[in-house]
Image 1 (cartoon, rainbow, N blue to C red):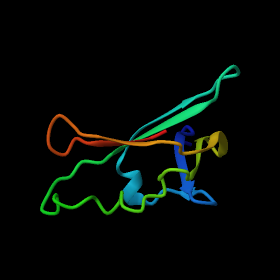
Image 2 (cartoon, rainbow, N blue to C red):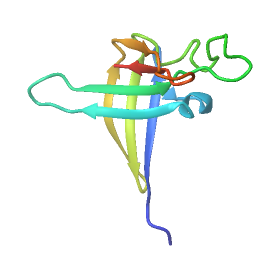
Image 3 (cartoon, rainbow, N blue to C red):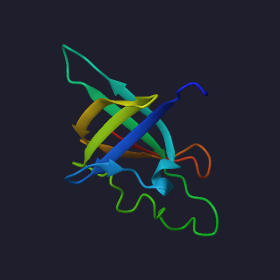
Length: 111
């Protein structure tokens, strides 16, 4: 029997958060959660926002109308074996687009 794995789940939506669609999940670069007893807890989600290929003049359809827009509700959970643990249930307060140093290397950060 294989050992249980660790799975990250990111949920987002305007009212009810649902799992991210596969095209957006494929662009996920990193997720960071900071828990604090003394300050506000926070999360940062970084997505690949680069353009490449024949449609590079247009914004990526996966990022247009993204469920990770400002004021969206976000849940981040990890599942170890069969038991999910919710790390954060919060609201996106800031969305930042950062150009990359080379073509196709731009990122979108949701905080």
